[in-house]
Length: 257
Ligand code: GLN
Image (tube, rainbow, N blue to C red):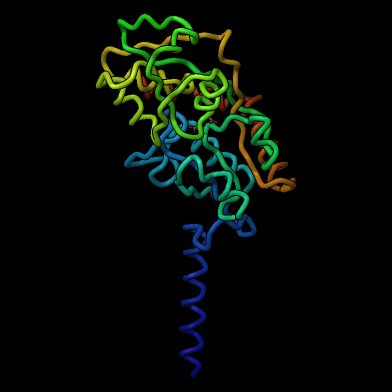
């Protein structure tokens, strides 16, 4: 009897340790884990690799998430899902925070709270090297590809152009490479990565048509406890140059491949 109790206690202790280590049990930050939702299809911010900073996940955001959790004496875990599902999963409590190169738009601010912004980006156009597209208005009679739910889709929608939406950036870029579309509208740093990875593409910028966007971490509305922790860490990582260093490191790695 005693033996059984001891065994049970040991098993329980082991299970509990395993939970702390792997963050099983979902998205509760009550333990010592912050579960970040992301869409690991957005290099250099988040992508899957054999040996990432958080399990198989790597990129600027993943490195930020890891340091942010650790500076609060916590562990970072990642749940990878479709970009479109992130804010719903956050509202459901399946994840504690979203870090996904996510632009803090006014529309999104209606449903979630955002941290201090940590990165400024803009939408750009990826075209074939011989394309005559030189400004956003040149897209009017072209076949446009965007990624579903990204701010790039919203921009093209607001311009009143028709477009085709893909689930992944790589899919949209393949359409362009294969000559099935004329232009992909996507965030600047990710565009750089795709242009570096594929022959015969170039980036066209049009700052008059695309406003700058700020990436921030999202938490559930009113979760000030977590937001305060996140903001303190972000402020520190911005002030001491950590985020800048990570951006340079991962951008160089991305283009060097
Ligand atoms: N910044 C864009 C957005 O917020 C794209 C983000 C992403 O694909 N991860 O919609």
